[in-house]
View 1: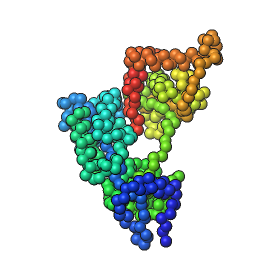
View 2: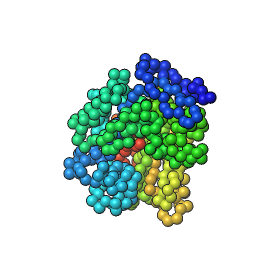
View 3: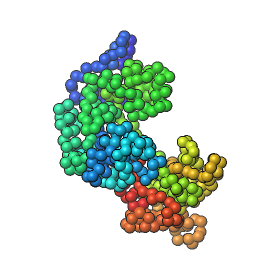
View 4: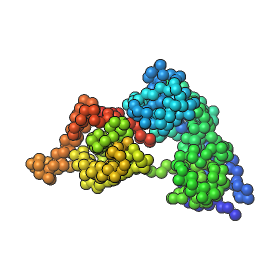
Amino acid sequence: MFTTAPESAAQRAADSYGAEIGRERAAVPPCEAPPGRDAHVFPPRPLRWLFLDLNSYFAAVEQQLAPELRGKPILVAPVDSDTTVAIAASIQAKRFGIRTGTPVWEAKRLCRELIVVPARHDKYVEFHEAIVAEIWKHIPVTKVCSIDEVACRLLDNENSVADATALARRIKAGILAHVGECLTSSVGIAPNRLLAKLASDMQKPDGLVVLEAASLPQRLYDLQLRDISGIGAKMERRLAQDGINDIRQYCERRPRDAGTAWGGTNGDRLWYQLHGVDLPEKATQSRSIGHSHVLSPGKRGVVPVRLTARRLAFKATSRLRRKQCRARLLVLHARFEDDKSSWRTSVKLPATQDSFVVLAALESLFPRLIAAGRTRPGDFQIRMVGVTLAEIEPVGGEQDSLFGLLDPDDPLARETRTLALSRAMDRINEKFGRNAVSLGPQHGERIDRIGTKIAFGRIPDLDEFHE
């Protein structure tokens, strides 16, 4: 006989959550049980999350800023080159099969009327902040998930289907009226954040989908496993080896068996989420800070790659100081033109946030990159280079150094002086703009302009656009 006693940490968390919201007395029908098994008993699963996903965000911002682009197929690219890929495509461009990641040359073949525009990441951050401010007028923003996604927790007096959908329509209308008429969005409403995200993807563009507990998990059966955040090619293969090829097969397992197929700690967590249980968030901590850059075709040799890597390291250490952290590991990584795999090497650092210390460590790594490039056929050609500061930790309280008044060339005083100089450079660039002062030569046209970019899952501070 299948028991409803807690089977894992995820189940215990679900029971705790049920006790927390036990004041909500509405009876929720249990989900349909697999043949031959008792129905699983769940805690109440009211609508708890509203997830808003802006449609074709970067392209929509460009159309908002340039009315002549509205209604036309446009592609946003990181650099002016046919060898790069799209980082966004307008709704009109998507009708031709153009998506994020489509090579520019291929996109031009798919749509002859395509307009390619360079990315303006500072504008995307400005619009993001205006959109978040507009949402706050209607409901508190619980979590900013990315530059174009936010999640809001619904209270007891706003989580009926009628109230939640009315709230969603007010938010969507407010963004169009007060931020920009091109900025449409799709909204998902569901008992937990994972399901709300899935719901927002079900109807695009300008959609509004509600997933109620009574319809779960059957409402999800038409989706692909890859539609669920966290399931990629590797996890899909692992599940297939265990006989799970779609969401129905996963949900028809017992939670313990589904968790075993998933693997890892709390592997049954996804099973409860797909059935509408709102589990507590798992704590996360940033462990690295980094930047990468795709180089222009004419700037992929030794000198521009080295200068680009130095510039990226300077930006990373500036962010490190702003976050009041220090790093213990420096990673240099790259992609060669003739290889799709990533090359990388690393070196240990003394716990530091000093640009001079990091740049000295980078210089020790660069000969390894040159040696790796020389073993490949043809000339040394690197398509992408990146620098990451890892094993970061908070600085905590600081005291003035005992060595600060020693001779500047004294080894004990050098890092104290260079860290102070690094911080002074931060203040100058913040006041007077990017590259008002920098470390090392720029060599005129030998290096690409390296601006701040929006990474997946991370929104730059506006201060970064001055670095």
